[in-house]
Length: 218
Image: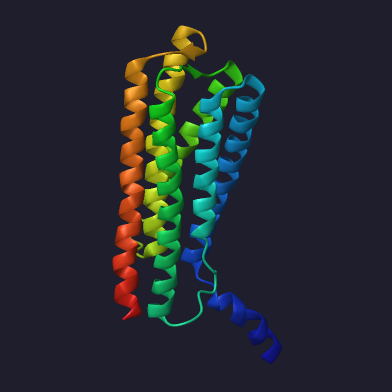
């Protein structure tokens, strides 16, 4: 009986919510890493700077998700867990803010160039966008009543990825209508606006986390 209790005890300490959060984060990391690898390869193959920039941004999103991974056992006091969680939340926001700023600068500098989406990249982009939008809906339903830095961070990351996905779908539609290459001033302006929006949300993550960290550090 003692051995059975000893074997069962670790399972009882596992937090089911933490496991679900980690599963969603891991799935997002895998999909983002795969999509980023394809974008980077295609960008190098076709010498398309935008695809390289896009691959880097998507890869940064995968890394930001990795920063939000939490221990399934979640040991320690609640206050210390929240403090550590908001520190990870802040780090994720800082990573995203840096790369969305880079995306904005790239958009401004390269505004006279066009977007290039060959057919294989169009297909991958649409599949990635559909996954991201579906993940946002699923996570909103699964963690609607769950509070804390990890679920809050997951929802914001999903929201940012969904917004980026909508932008990419618009890019792909415009590229498909023009034969893979599209040079549109309006599309560059719209991309810059979305970059500013994503940068602002990421900066909000950092500012909000700073306030929470000060509170739980006191």
